[in-house]
Each structure stands twice: as structure tokens, then as C-alpha cells.
Length: 150
Image: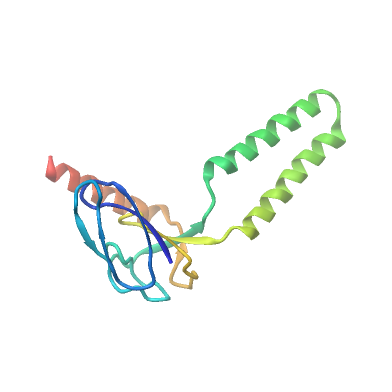
């Protein structure tokens, strides 16, 4: 299992490849983070202990948007040049390519609270897709903590 997370103390990006509970020391601030035991089903986040996790596709959003923008620009250009068949081929081809990418790319499990990404874990029924209301609750919690610090 590969884990990507930020240091809770200084937000330095950390990576760890592990199959059992271990410790990670931040190279920037020397904060020692003890990870909890890792269960194959991943019921809780091993970094912060939060029980609310969600699954998403492990695909960079910027690349997806670049494919969409390129297809829109190319189809607009071919439509302007009165090449209707080429326009439809570009639009349908980009949709087919997007569908194949969706099937090919695996899921990643993400923690709402700390944002840790867990790769190599099989998503189960407890790992629901992203919900904006749950994310907003944790965002508000993070903002309140920052206000109390300052």
C-alpha cells in the first residue's frame, strides 16, 4: 500500500509504502507520526484515525480537462471548416477515450480530514464516492481550528 499525506505539523508532503503500522519522521520539522495498524479493508485513516473516507479515480484532473479542452477546440475548428464528419469523429472519439480511461484507472481512497491518499487498497461498500456536505463539514472544522490558533 502506498500512502501520500501531509505532515500534521508543517504540511510537508510525505510518502510511505507500507503494509503494517510504522512511524514516519518529517524531514523538515522532525515531527514523529505514528501510523495505526493497516487493515486490508481500511475502515479508518491510518494517519489521523478518521472513519470517513471516500473513493475517487486516481487520475489528474488537469489532464482530464486538457483532453476535454483539446477536443472542444479541435471540434470547433473542424465545424467552422464545414467538416461535420470529422467534428463528430473528434467528439465521439474523445468520449470513447474518456470512457476507456475511466475503466483503466484504478480507485484511490482519500481521508476527508487529513487528505491522505491510499493507493493499493481495494475499495469496499464503506468507501462511498465524494460527498460535498461531508467535505464542507471538515473544511469548516479546519477553518475553526486555524481561527483558534490565530
